[in-house]
Amino acid sequence: MSNSRKSIFMAILLYSFSLVLASLKLTAIETTMILGASAGWQGVEKRVQVEELEALRPYRVLALSSAWTGSLSAGTGSAGSRDEEIMALYAAWRNFPAQESAVDLALDFDETAPERFTDRRGRYQVQVSPAVQSVNGRWARYGRGAALFSGNRENSAPVTVRPGNSALFTPGRNVRDFSLEFWAYPNAMENGEQLLSWAAVDNQRIFCEAQRNRLRWTFQELFSPPGGRGSRFTIILEGRTPLVPRTWSHHLIRYNADSGLLEYLINGQIENIAYTTASGREGGDVYTPRLNRDGAFVLGSRFSGILDEFRIYNKVVASPGRTALENTGRVSIELPELAKFPRNGGRIETRTLDLGERNSMVLRIEASGGRMGQAQGQRRMAIRNIYAGRGNFRFPDNSMLQFFIRAGEEPYQFSRISWTPIVPGEPVPETIRGRYVQVAAAFYPSGDCETSPYLEEIRIIYDKNEAPYPPSLVTARALNGAVDLAWRPSPDEDTRGYLIYYGTTSGVYYGEGARLGSSPIDAGNRTSLRIEGLQNGTLYFFVVAAYDGISRRPDELHPGKFSKEVAARPLRMNE
Image (cartoon, rainbow, N blue to C red; front, side):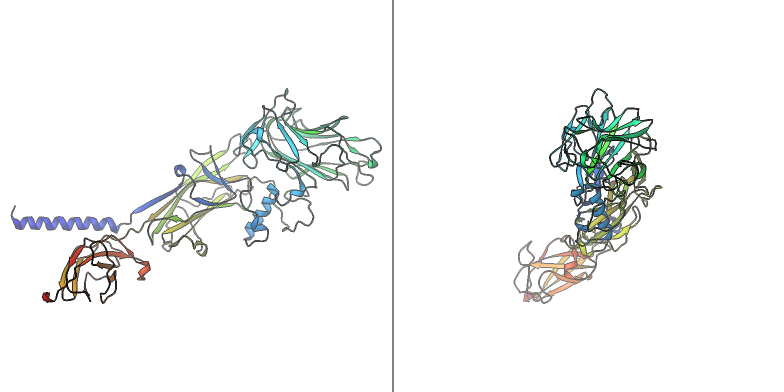
């Protein structure tokens, strides 16, 4: 091959290589950051009423929590939104930190093992038989666990709850207002199954047992006449609604000592009432509870199924979601006490995630998830992966997930940046740019608050805004007190200009004295520049870097790697 042909071949090869290099940069290189799935949820910094659940999918998912997991500060005087106030009130009903004076016993079974079941008020001692098991949050009505009973008729005391000296049901005490509640999930509801009982000396009893698929409450020798003189009597309240096996139902007994009204409610609806008066009707002398000695509660005797959230109050529970507390100082609203999940949902926010480069652009957010819930009559959660990567995450039962995003260049000033709603899989607005990004998701339950959406994975797809490739073929020609620099342009289409770095030591570019300023000098989008004001006889070293950026402010320029270093020594003789 002749020299001329070799020259032509090399020119074509170099030109082809430059085209390939340029095409690589002209197309945005997508980078992916993953939260959830195998990567875990460590990047989720804020969680309000949302928790991680396992055993639903191969990896942990995020879903609404049926136990309060947020802070009450928003509803107690600090600045917060209306939704935060409502959620704080909901928390007050669910976990009672603000109404402790009304709660006498709180047995929520959220501990990880039956032997650790504890009255969170500390007024009752709890003893648990080895036959009792603990189930996790997947089976519980609320929170992270519930108590599972086997129905073994030989075990007469699966869970025993003994009152201490400060308890409402302390033996020998005259009791006025009280309420009892629990959630039940029976397996079969056979006759004689006893969910709850109280037994003391002299044949004093309270027991709740199954009869013909209904629950019957018997209050035996409990109510004493005024002054303690005269005979006590027995009251029986039977529910009218048949209980469906393998379905959660809420049971509430409440007693008003002023009127003598004793009521039994199932799922917030009154099933039966009685008056503890001499006439058995409203009016007249009221018989009130007087407790005999050696009394204790027993849960789950001969019962097969699950119990959750057993509570005793020293007040009348006025209506579902509200207690008859006086002067609570709280907003008067009806709270969804009987719903599994909070009506106002929950929320997560990631920490400020570092995309690595300034002016990075989020292209889209992809997410996968579905909805979860326990269908009536089913023993297992119904898990459905309806969406994977795209869509509004709106489900037929009105449960949904809504996503938000915001971005910025500094990680500590995000509170000033507004959230932008987005739809997974669709392009994110081009204004979402910056080195740091935050993603949020709002979780909303179904219309009846019985099912929750869940989030399995979030993928942040972004253009990392890699800095431009450096210019090539940089040359330096020495002049009198100056150096002429020239270079071939960077192949990047988003190159906005070039910075010239100079100095008097190889690899150290902190030069000063040039008429155009200290190092680096902004050459704009030119591909050559004369650097004047240099000292004759001094050897200067130069490199050139291409930059991009959303503005021409020096602190927002985004320079790439340095070109190959060149050197020149200005001399008067070179003119």
